[in-house]
Length: 378
Ligand SMILES: *Cc1c(COP(=O)(O)O)cnc(C)c1O
Figure 1 (cartoon, rainbow, N blue to C red):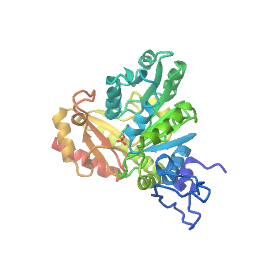
Figure 2 (cartoon, rainbow, N blue to C red):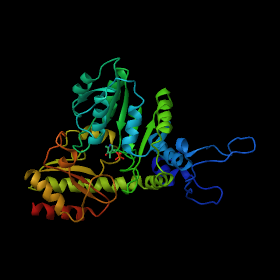
Figure 3 (cartoon, protein in one colour):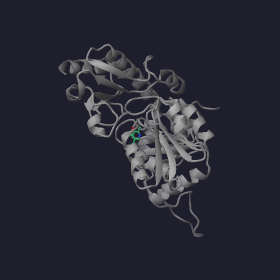
Figure 4 (tube, helix red, strand yellow):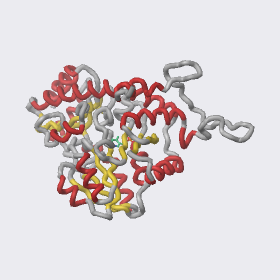
């Protein structure tokens, strides 16, 4: 029988332990694997860096959820992005968004400053801008992130794939904020999808990890896998095991986080201290129609609000909540709040009155009550 993604996730592909009958696979921290009297490997592995068994079990669950041909795990989300960029030719032209995770943008600028890539940016909502940024026969990679952290602007994945492919480029998607329980970007035309597994995929703010999945096992994927074991930015077996445990509850976590964020967004819209609520799940969000098409199982737990009282009100709000913890990061079961501009720095386009909220799985009414009380203090 063909199992549905929810089943594959909950059972982590039923990768049990044959030796003991354990319903959960053991962690394999061994770095090295034995050979027999003919110097042949006893199993499939010889050393953990290229393909540790626990890492591959976790990667295989993710690949199944994404409908991918293969997957690799990395020691962080940024290491995963770096591995994708490392597959490009020297001097490759890359098209990316003006608004995106600031660390990834810094990495792009870092490589451009060394002359390794050239960059053209487009506004995430601007379809014509994307089309004009891509150069036929020259652009090698179109890199998108949707919804874009922290403005939650929505990019049309299918359209970006069409534009990239028409120009002979590939489409890479940072799917961190739209995990495979709601968006299967490969099905929409992406060639590579990357995740900071640190966020939703693990979901418990206790693992730093990245992942890349591929539509096909082509030459570029071979290059990526070579880079993966040559540079060695691989996760630990324990982190991989934890991430696989996290994946088992991805669907239910994401569903609850989406429901909570929608309630919080609606409550914030009605609040007099708030000038803007940025959440793709709201019908008046400019990207709502596209998001509804490509986020088929919820809009996620992430939203931002902008405060009429400016940066000082934003600072005070983040310092005054009790349920929301003031900390960076997103996608965990506990709600987090952050005044984003001081974190991203002066070169970031993020408005200085923007507060980013990552809604967890707590009671929605507690989240709303907490924000309202804290807003009263601003
Ligand atoms: C956090 C994040 C990253 C970077 O991931 P790390 O695991 O922190 O290296 C990349 N993209 C997005 C959208 C993120 O939120």
